[in-house]
Structures are given as C-alpha cells and as structure tokens.
Length: 506
Image (cartoon, rainbow, N blue to C red):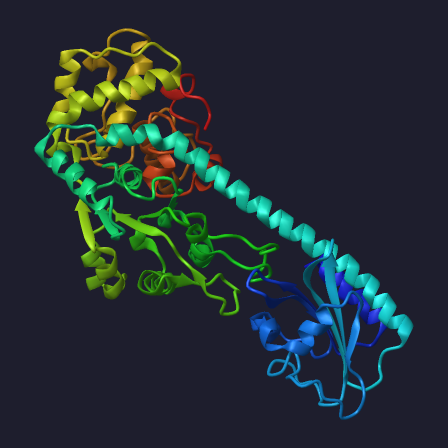
C-alpha cells in the first residue's frame, strides 16, 4: 500500500534525524489530539488508540503556543512536570530527546509533529529548522484534508436532501386511503409523531414502511431537520458500524479520510433504519448503547464519545420476535425498538383503497414518463381489486406503470395487465421446473444457470423491466444492483424483450 503524504513527511524526518518515534497528530474540536501517522522503531498501532487532552498537559500546551519547534526534553534527568506524551503506549527511556513542532496554518493550530530519539542531546539547530519546515508542509496537508472532509460531509448531506426531495411524492401515495385498517395506521402515526419515542414499523415488503416513517418525521417537531434512511440489508456487514457511526481516517484499509456516519448526518432529525433485523450482532449491541445512553463513537475513534440527538424509527418485514427466539436478534434491543409498534396492513386487507391509490399513482406515472395522465377503466379497477398483491403498493405501482406504457395513451384496460400467478411466480411448465424454452434465456446454459436465469427474468418482469431503484428486480431478489448487473452479464441475459424499448437502461 503506497505511503500517504503524511507518512512521506515522516520518512523525510527520518533522513534528518535517526528518530525512534516520529508522529503527526491532529487537533480535534474538543481540544484533544489524535495520531494520524507514525514511524520509527518504537512505533506501535497502540498510538491510534490515544486521545491526548491538552488541558491536562500544560507543558505540551505551552510548547504548542509557540510558532517554532521546541525541544521539550534533551538533558539527562530533565523533568518537564507531566507524563511523556506517549506514556503507556511507547516504551521510551526516561532520558531521551523530544522535539515538538506545532502545525499551524494561517495562525490556526492544526496539530503537532513530535520527534523522539532514545538518547539525550540528539538535535542540532539545523535539524530543528529542517523539521520545522516539514511541520509547515504537514500543517497545510492536514488543513486541506479537513477541508476535503468538510466538503465530503456537505456532499453527503446534499445527496440525502436530494433523495428526500425525490422520494417525498411517494410518501403521499402510501398514505392515501380511507379503509378502516389504513386510517388506524395514519392515526397511530400522527399520535407518535410529536414525541421522541422510538417507532418500530412492521409489515410486508412494499406496504410503505419508509413512506410512513417520512410522514412521522414531517409531522414531528424535527421536521426542519434531516430525514436519513439506511437499508440495513444492503450494507456489507463488515462496514455496518462505519455506515451508522462513521470512521476516523486510517481506521481500516481504505479509510483514507474521516467520514460521518448516518447518526451524525441525522443530527436533530430522524434516522430510519429499514430492515433492522439484518444488522450484524456486534452492531446491534452498538445501536442498543446509542438508544440507552445517546452517545456513540466512530470506528477508530479511540474512545471519543459523540452525542446523538436523533429520533430513531426502525422497520422490518420479518417477525422480529421470531428472530429473537432463534438467536439472530438481541432481545433487549427488540424491547428498546418496539417502544411504539406500528403494523402496516397488506394491500389485500385494504382493497377498498385501490381506486384511490391507482388514481394517485397514475398521476405520478404520467408525470415521470412524460405522457398524459392515463385513464383506467372500471373493468381494470375490478381486476386490480381481485388481486392478492404479494408485492403490495409497490407491486401495484409497477403494474400500473407497465400498463400505462402498453396502453400507449389509451384508457387502461384489463388486457394491458400481465400478472404473475397469485403465488407471486411467473407461469411455469407443468413439471414446475424453470422454463428452459423462454426465448429470453440464452441457449447453452447448464441446468442450474437456466434456473437462475429464469428467476432473474421473473423478477425483471415483475419489476416492469427495472433493474435498480425502488421495486426494481435487484430489490425483489434481495441483491445490490451491481451484483444483478454482473450476474446478467455472466449469464448473457438482457431485459425481457417486451421491456427493451419501453424502459430505459437503469
């Protein structure tokens, strides 16, 4: 792995003086120092765990108030009145040489560079001056990295804001309805909204859990703050802690800069954790701590606690109590999350809402496809009301979008709908095996790949040809869009031919 710019500065220090330990530290907003880079025979990963409080080290603080490097320790038996900077982490002898160079950029203290040599009187004036010049370079590097981190955070916030604008319209679709079952949901959501209570939303896939969470946020006292959503099932388990809580630079391979987690991005707003049952066990314990103590720490944060002023809403389509019983979910976390449970009924239990939902969704579909708002016939509505809707509102929208495309500006009729079977599967041969005669399945595939190809095509047809995005084939199959694209490429699959012209490439 190539050396970072700060590590190259430490390599230059080693050419000036034979340092047993050289380190570059950055100043945190709470006036503590954390190690960014280190080198030398006595260097140890334990340095990453240090958090040095300047308020408890007056001699070090005085050295940093100067504009030039300071030799803090050089003579035999010399005492400075406080512990060595790295005491407990690095076994430096009592008599050694220590040089401290403040890192300043435009009079702002960015951190410090320390150089320790395990002998006394190790520094010559010209060496001190050369190290001071390197300290100036390090200060500029740290300043630019902090600017880049701030820009990255701003871009994360902008992406969330834009995503919120994009998805707000779908909220209305999911909250439309006049059936008693749905009105109870809306009423319970309104009762919970003004409080800070943690809400657990349950229900089948496609019932609108995220949209209900957005509505609770918009009705709450936190409406002016951000709404941040994370699909826990889409996060790589090894990176789940970083996604939620953020990480420091160098916390793991590839962490080339500090990054805010979802809790920081949702500060003074609402954090929505979809499919919370899929969080790894270790992260479940961390989440429990945040709920109980309202504090967390970034990955690699060396014990630095951050406050969490966030309203938490969780959701899952799984039976969370069954997950507890089978040892996959913490019982104490379950009780913390389910302070205010809210169950969403499937669409088949609110059939009377289908005409209202269809009307609203068709208005949105017309706008998104750039076509006049499609009309729908009474016969088509009756057909929709007779469906079981295993995919719920999401499946209804996909069916309407596909029908609007096929209707080509005419009133949508029953013939414009092409549904899978009531059990959610496309038609299969009488033997129940995957249809090898499907013209969209490439020839020459073995039996297993043929079955996989049939499942991918089924998901694509259910999704109206969409690979990515809400309701897309990747979501239906439970895999990232990139994984599905790679699988389709390996199998030589394309979208079903009925969608290749009508739906643009996702």
